[in-house]
Image (cartoon, rainbow, N blue to C red; front, side, top):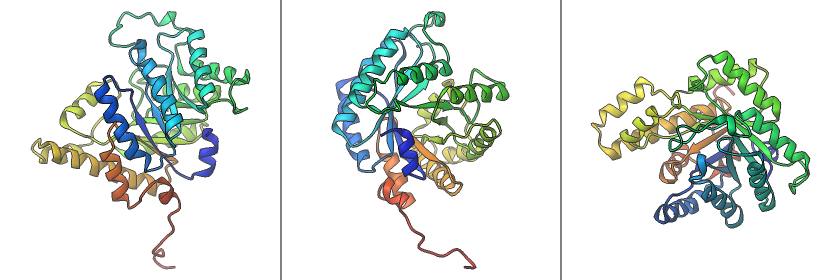
Length: 315
């Protein structure tokens, strides 16, 4: 389903992200978790994309399999890195033929295995260029939907790691939206105030497309350190760190703290009219299912159709 139709039907979207498995064992575990998450009836799911060819074909296979074998609507990531225009067109043609309705367009970073890669050899370097190219592809009428692909781009509530100037950063995001992006999905964050500030700055910059908030529960101390080491610009609020320190490093306790923190983020986001929540699942289902359960809902549609059980005070 085209993303415009999803947003028209759902006041708040709930979606999940997967990454392509690297081994048969990982693939088996992923599909087991996909079956469990499918029961939550997400608005859509995204699939990440490895730069440099390492997992690109696996991504394509996973996207097509999700489209054919599940009720979940896949949104594949597509990056500019290490791609010619012809290669990008071939991928878009394959997805169009499979009935995939949406693309998440990213500038991307050079893969760690190719530190000397010359980005000047790529057909496109920036997300706005890729968005414009997908819009041109849509005009060729190769997609079964006459509107072509819906297009998502990334947003960074805590700032893009390579763009320390926040004013310039919003100019870059506005360029992607002006090029034809239909919606924005944010990088993960742990302080909702960063998201609200980002959303306000989008409004001030004239960005009016839906903005979906990216949530990733802390699963372990090691995972948290990995997130800190990655060029995401993510920071961890002191109250979260204090809660993790109180666990003494006990793995299950750290996981519970992470799920509780993410659940409170989601509750607050819902209370403040977030347009959507995108769960970075790390190919696991337990944390996302626990968050749904603690929020008191069976699946996405039951949350969307919930009716007030208690009248507001004074009415």
